[in-house]
Image 1 (cartoon, rainbow over the protein chains, first blue to last red):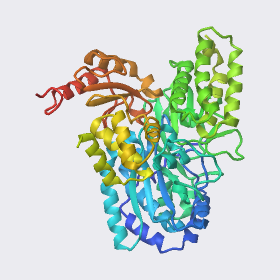
Image 2: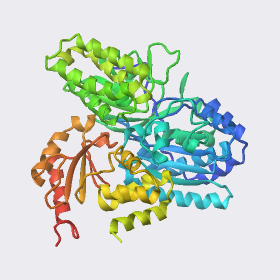
Image 3: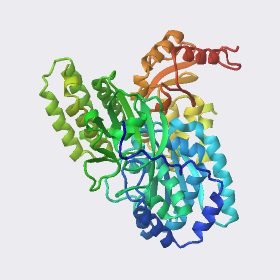
Length: 394
Length: 161
């Protein structure tokens, strides 16, 4: 089988980081404005899944007036099917630390935190070693910036940026209303840049090689490369750095087991794409691309024809029901009712039309839930129920 | 002084007594005691001058901050999609059979507790589990039995009396 567009492997993220000292010294000899412009022209978008332009994020925080500001690296990687951030932190930690320090220089922050999920506790000793070495160098070049690890304790919702701030402040990880946004009111109410681990690692590449090297990869609106966490029914599960904009058909050609029925793009909060839509689906951020363009934090889960989509949805909903922070009613009650609902339909206690009621419920959740968790349940729910309705019913 | 009170006082000295120091203190107690008793939570509240309800509310939000008595080794088997697809239930059965406890229980000698948890981030090496902070991946029932035996035989371990 041949395709026009080949999957392009890239090797930036895990390439050696031995020159981090040089990259750091060189970067902080430039003006903050230059660095922000570099990031903006690279068109790097956040790699945690939401895809907010990173340059703009840094710019907004740099413009906020406050003596105290923070840089936070979001390493609360909890989305089912994602495991790239752990690899970055264990294989190229200095890239992330360097990027945090450069960010601190740009926005005027002296303190940085890595919010590490409790499940990755075992990364701590090595990471602390790297931080110590890094701090030693910062002192040598008179850069006033400290980095500390803050451990999470097993709550998916704390990956949501404002919930993460609440958690760091010693409270329940319940998301805040936005606005105000972190750029003006973040951790401890101070202007804060919060970036995903991978986003920070990409800024290292951009500061090292210049924006063009990054911008030349990918397609319009989805520039650069991205790490993909590949799992499920695939002969080669693992982490791969690929250029953005690829078609899902090519992805499946490369990673499928020959019997791929559907791919979940973006984890449990993402979308399920059935086989008939592989060719028209591209992986990247929403833009004016023809066809469907799916953003992703990099989780790609493949399912072959031996899997029941009912079980898949059941597993996701149970996940959401447990991980919902319970603060807002649409999400707390919605997740419970969706789970109860699909089970009732499966057992024949409710007729098939009940699925349409549940679809309307997800729509309500999309509009009324306070944060991304409750809003995004609709993504996987509707894409599974609409494409595999028969599997939900009997 | 009660050893738990002393632990809490030391943790507060180390991390500070502000609200934003609460999580590291809770984690410190769990690391030592394996769980947060009502007594610990009240002590923490007193030490940080917070309402006990706030401490309780925060502690019970986080799934890794147990508030029921747990065994020395907490086994957390990942139950999220990929691990579930790749045989999580067989792993659970193997553990339950070997330790003679079911999910949610602790062995009578207080050595092992068996729990399930959400995505551990080892989907490419599923199924996976944690024993305390140690990760074990690409599990099979045979492998799980070997791992548990090694814990049972561990020098200084549960049965090394």
